Amino acid sequence: MAISRAQLLKELLPGLNALYGLEYAKYGEEHKEIFETETSERSFEEETKLSGFSAAPVKDEGAAIAFDNAQEAYTARYNHETIALGFAITEEAVEDNLYDSLSARYTKALARAMSYTKQVKAANVLNNGFDAAFTGGDGVALFSTAHPLTSGGSNSNTPATAADLNETSLESAVIQIAGWTDERGLLIAAKPRKLIIPPALMFVATRLLDSDLRVATADNDLNAIKHMGAIPEGYAVNHFLTDSDAWFLTTDVPNGLKHFVRTPMSTNMEGDFDTGNVRYKARERYSFGFSDPLGMFGSPGA
Image (cartoon, rainbow, N blue to C red; front, side, top):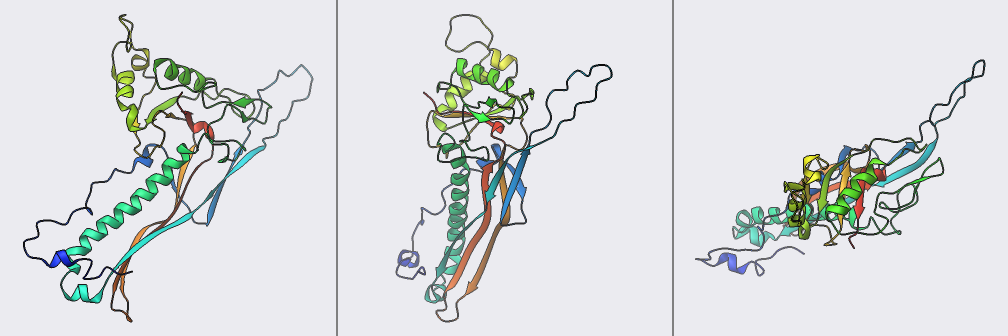
């Protein structure tokens, strides 16, 4: 339905101070703190994880060299979605000089709506990360205590017992990440990079990462997390996380969480011959997901 003069009657009134509600500030591109962005030329993308080789064995004198085969562990798939929205202004509204005054406001509102959807879809990868109904290429949820390995073992990127964000849980996460292995059981020297939190935890995160001494103790012990640089990139608040006590750590493991851009944001405007309405639309295609779940550690909170 087009925006008509009746809907915009107040805009015609002299002395109107402001029309409000369309120009609220919006949060930035918070997904960039979590996802690697790549371009895509297809309707979907698939990424296959290879197992690598086992530890090299000792070769006895005169014995033949042992040969190993790299294997395909699993494949992660990204299905791109088309996100689009538009609005129209009637020919009569244009005639009454409402177009110039309203087009700027409504295009800002349109941009805000498109941005909001993108941030929600990105955050939902984490919001659904503990739900067994949302599985990755290895057949389990993003955050699991049992990511299967071709060697027969498993990796865990979530606490065995869900824990709130505090000094003990954060230190335990750093230690747990250091013990991750590849598909053949070889240590991969993984390290955390950044803490991702909802707004409710930003004060807790500041105390944990920025205090020189240990938090909430009367001792003069150093805050080891800060002095060791255990979380080198600090923390980032994501306002689209739905669980107020869940927290996450990005790691330096490559090919973790990814954002594929199939078609960048584009806008277009046209007039409709039959009605005379002016129509404006925005459209983009993208997908969010994860390839290697070890790109992220997460706890749902206690």
